[in-house]
Image 1 (cartoon, rainbow, N blue to C red):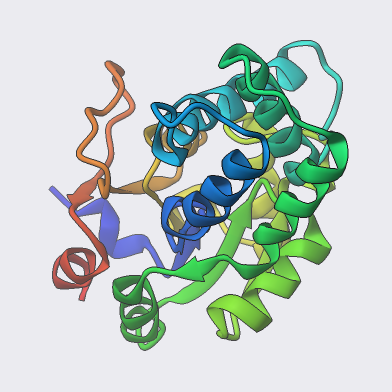
Image 2: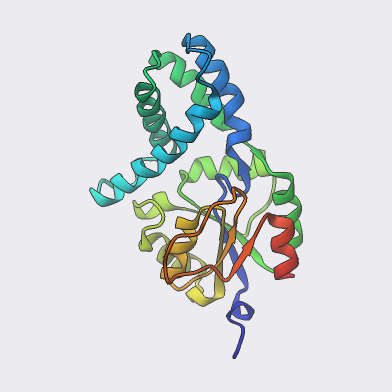
Length: 234
């Protein structure tokens, strides 16, 4: 039986949480925000992050289900943060939230991701396929990841958030490739699930030691990080 991965010539990457270290980049300024809000000492940035991260996903799914279109990656994160702080009964001002949101301009990549991307670029075309806004993705690729990608594709262009199938179909059209020629690389199982459902191959980088969804659309590869991923792909 032919190995389906052999047909892959292009890797599409989620970047938020897969290439860029969201928790490591956002929890320190989140702790600063909590101090400004006179938050009880028993509530930490880690506590807020755990709830906030889950709420972000719900916000995106709601937009898709209600057919509201792509309301913006950063606005979704802001709405989810407001919901989380209110859930924890933390008082805040909108000015404090706006000041905190500037931290998204200073996201740092995982070291293994940068090393891995450089290695993978010797064999594959590397593409960003993300829920972030196009201008924001362009900024991050140039100033934070500091790599020249083959292409940078935003879900904003089709007015939906991943894992909506239209995002993956848009990638195929833009890259002029068949789904079987593309492998989605992500640390979030929902992204691999959506990509596999749309005919892509999938590599689940399980950075966070989380189970994969109970689904027939399984990843082709599971790795712990980009070092492990490179060993399997190269």
